[in-house]
Image 1 (cartoon, rainbow, N blue to C red):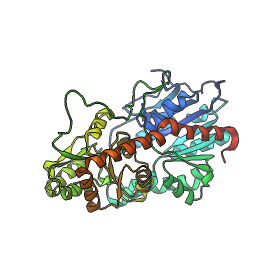
Image 2: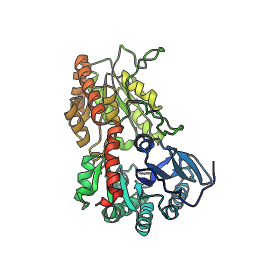
Image 3: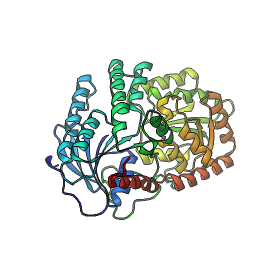
Image 4: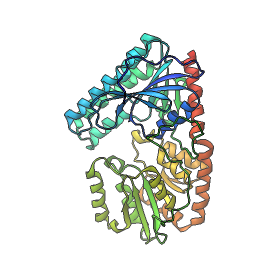
Length: 438
C-alpha cells in the first residue's frame, strides 16, 4: 500500500484516449461494466484509464493502488450503518474526489468521466472547464428518482434525507450536469429517450446496455487479480451432483430480494403454478441488505402456503449462482413497473440468456426488446396469472424451453458480448476527445 501522490502520471505517448474516472463504484470494483468493459476490454486496447474510488472495506487512510493497467486513488471509508457514519463516509468520498483538481493539470488526461455521482460531478465539471478537458457523465441508474420513490413508498431508512437527496440530485443532474456534459452515456435506449426528453440532445447521448463475457480474456489483458469475473457460459455439472433435484420442476430468480423489488410477486406466482405443476419449486438466488426484507418474504411464503416449495439460496459468488441458473428449468425477471425500473438494463436477463435458459419477463422496454428480438421466452404483463401461465407452459414443454434457450444464447453472443459493447464506447470516446463531443 503506497502513500497518496498529489500529481497525475505523465502523459503516455501511445495512441488511445487518456481518461480519469470518478465513480460511485468502490475499490476493488466488482460490477462487470467496470471490471470487464473498462478493466479488460478498454484497458486491454491500450487506453489509459485511472480512477478515483472509495474503499469498499473500512479504511482509515487514503492510498494509491494499481488496477487494470492504471492507477486508483482509493479514499478512506467508514462502513458503519449509523446516520453519522454514513455522513462521514460521504464527506471522506467527496474529499478524495476533490483531488481531481490537481490530477487534471497538465496533459495526463484528455477527459474526466463521472459515473453516478452528483456533488463530486460539479467539482469535475468545474475542473474540466478550468483545465480545458472534456467532461463526460455516465448515468447507469436513475438515482434521484430512486431516492424520491423510496422516500414516498416507505422503503427508505431515513425518508426525509432521501427526499432531500432526491430533490437536490435531480436538480444537479438534469439542470446542470447533463446539459453541460460533452457527452452522456446511459444504461438503455429507454433511458436515452427519457433523458433526451429532459432537454439533452440525443446526439450527445449513447446507450450502453449491460452485457456478458462468455469467453476467457485474451492473453496479456490487464485484468485485476482481486475481482475475477466468471465467463457466463454453461459448464458440465460438477461431479458432486446437482444443486436442484432432477425430480423437481423449477423456476428461478437471480437478484436482489430488497423490499423495493417486490419479489413477493413471485411467491403469489408460485401459488398459482402449483395446482398445475405440483412438483414446481421456486429458487430465489440473492439476498437483501436489510435482513427484515428477507424475513418478510419468508413470512409471506408461509402465509401463502408455499414455504415448502420455496428455496432461499442466499447471496452467492457469481460462479455458484450461475450453476443454479444452469440447472433451473425456467428463469424469471419480474421488474416492478416504475419509472426507475423502466429505464433499466437488467443484467440477470442477459445472464439467463447466455446460460441458454428460457425466460419469462414482464413488458419492461429493455426486456421486451431482448425477448422479442431473440425469441428466448415469453414477455407478459406484470400480472401473477400471466407469469404463472407462461411458466406452466414452459415447465410442461421442455423441448420448447431448450429451443428458446438456444435462441437466447446465440443472440447475446452476437449482440451483448462486452467486446462488442466496448467497440461502441471506444468509438464514442475517441470522437469526444478528438474535439467532436457535441
